[in-house]
Amino acid sequence: MPYDVPSAAGEAEAALDSDVAETSVQAGRGTPMTIRETSVYRGPNFFSRLPMIRIQVDLGALEAYPSNTLPGFVERLLNDLPGLARHGCSNRHAGGFARRLHDGTWLGHVAEHVALELQVLAGHATTRGKTRSVRGQPGVYNILYAYEHEEIGLLAGQYALRWVDSLLPPDLSGLRGLRILDRNAAPGPISLEAAVAELRRLVRKHALGPTTQALVDAAKRRGIPVARLDEQSFIQLGQGSRQRRLRASVTSRTSHIAVQTAGDKALTKTLLAAAGLPTPRGVVVGAA
Image (cartoon, rainbow, N blue to C red; front, side, top):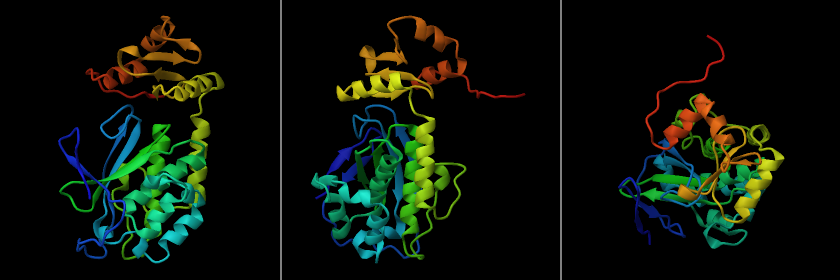
């Protein structure tokens, strides 16, 4: 049976059942899935100690159509993304997610696994995710999944939802709310190959240098939380008063990083705002 968990916002979530029972929701065919909101958690949060992306969706009519009720859906899903067959899901063994698909699971849960798999194909080792229904709002779910780079993680979520939508019958497809994830997103189906290629391009673009990457990998092996603070090599290890920051091989035990940060107005404002301090609005421009 589902259980209630109070959230930080005073909202409550209900965990998905392991087995899909026959739904009592009487939704009319044709009401499409809608993206309602999104959040990026850059550190420990209510849902996990890991950084995660949350996308809240309203399944609409799809609440009445778990995966095993959609002809050909599961077969095409596993054929186009064979890596999904290795996902363990709540069964905690390879093939567990495939079993859930055949038994029947809701499409928010499916999108969660697709977002993780797309990041894996792009080169990021993301494996943690969860999907929770929002209490008191039938058909509304919070999709949560891990990420290594915020831009890549958000784009993977967008691609996942668009691709899942493209596998649906015409009278159930038509994803709404894409601009919540990306103001420039164009509606319509996507090419899975093109999506993976774009994610891989971004992984190469945002890759850390070898020295910084080696330090980040060592921290992760030791269970130390890692957060990237800019698009270069500015990294935070740990949380709170015991955190340390580094840029390449230079650490915050020297004044070098503080001097560099203070000389970068945009970065200084970003860090102050992230700490909850009021900062003036502004953007970096390249020309008058």
